[in-house]
Image (cartoon, rainbow, N blue to C red; front, side, top):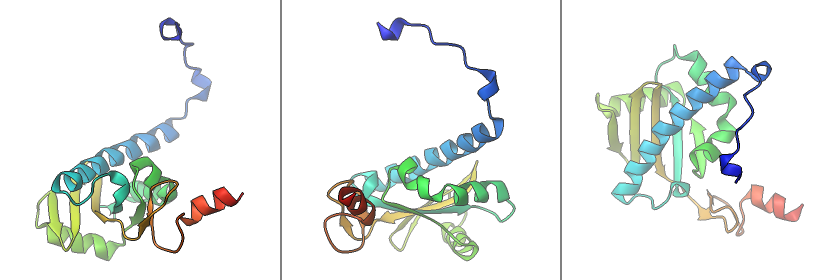
Length: 157
């Protein structure tokens, strides 16, 4: 059986500590996103993560490493979190949501579900994704037709 075979030892020449650190941070952010999505699901706001749209940012302006990682991987975050859309908040939005939280880690305001954590220092809010469901990928999008722009381009290729 393939399950009983011994795997080769990893080749140390392929190790990349910087890349590994980035992915460790992204996986921590994903874990926090899953907590927020579960709260949204339990409240009945969404039925599945693909029905959600998330906005997130580093909790403070001195977190340049985290902010850079989020910016650099913004396009991949929606696939990593399995949601319809992800955007990066500006500093003023972060300050607004932190004040709305009033010191609480989890909060709800104006149709948003919020989650503020210290490790990694992150502000994250979610809401139901606007628009219609793509018939191919099931992500929600705003526009015409049955397919979102990405799926439409794939099908036409």
